[in-house]
Amino acid sequence: MSQEIIDNEQKDFTKNWVNSSRFLFYLTVLCFIAFVAGCSFRIYNQRYKGKPDVDVQSSSKYKPEYK
Image (cartoon, rainbow, N blue to C red):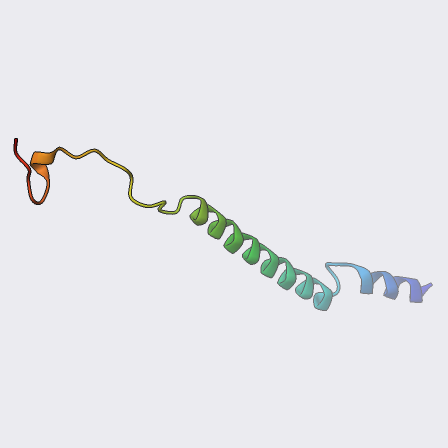
C-alpha cells in the first residue's frame, strides 16, 4: 500500500521537482525557439524588396534636363 503512494508521488508533476524542472526547461527552450522563428519569418516577409520604379520629372534630377 505504501509503495503505491510513493510511486504516485514520484510520477506527480507537483511532487517531483526534477521532472517538473526538466519539463519547464524544455518548454521554455521550445517557446524561445518558436518566438525567434516567428520573428525571423515576420522580418523576412516585410523585407526591403528593392528600389521602386518611380517616374521622376526630368527637371528635378541631379543633372536636370530642360526643353
